[in-house]
Image 1 (cartoon, rainbow, N blue to C red):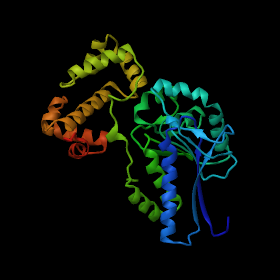
Image 2: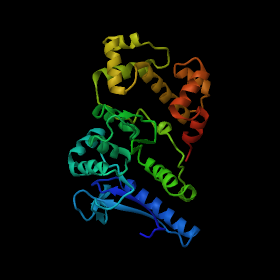
Image 3: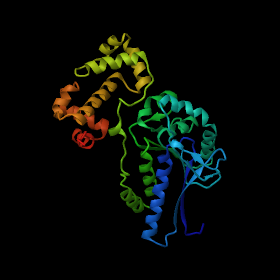
Image 4: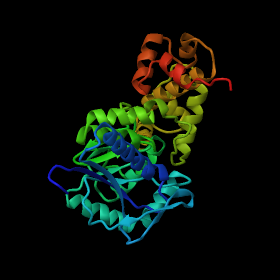
Length: 335
């Protein structure tokens, strides 16, 4: 590399069964950014590259759907970042079970971290970082529907499921699949050229300023371990959500003590019972905003609140959008 050449190389971990967009998305972003840099300055010395890095000496890697890509390079290649993709799974349990088959990759992540290589992970790829011990005591995020599974397996990690990108101590985690696109653009702006990152984002119709997964979180799609106490609580809460509720009333309906109920909710939901009730009320409001023409005041009443102003603040805090903004973005429209 010449003295004037500016090279930025992102390594992509060659993971069998990887969600292909976790690999090809960053590849496309950096290739398009390279082309835009060359259009802007035909003599540019900027070199944006991606390279597949393997832990098993393989020539190619087969992603989800059976498509193979390559070539895969050995881990000795110089990298500015190593990115762990998400991988396809049928359930949270299946995703956790697959970790046992990624021993060489987890060992490689530990070795790269010791070498001082910055590491990032997308989607459920964050589970590999946590399994390697690289997230212990650190703040992190992952795909929002894997919240409970992550907390249960890695209680030492400070999980913030609403954030799209979390960097802590040279280790970065991103949320659900497309969050990696925003992250690569943010990285391009920070490490290479903000204007080039902005032009690339416009070319690809990506909003790099998204900071939250909150508007997309759906408790109905969130996978949680089955538990009889949780099922009793959920059944009672969904039936009585339209009115004011207390912890003692919920504990009685579940046939347990308040102390046991509080402990269970902390372990199972990462929240207090009343905090979970607020989540459920926001979820009901989201569904009504998406599927009905009810006024916000009518929706507030159906969600067990009497004060529309305080519920509007709760909704904005939970989703990062006002109710009007949420309805405008997510309401179901006639085909």
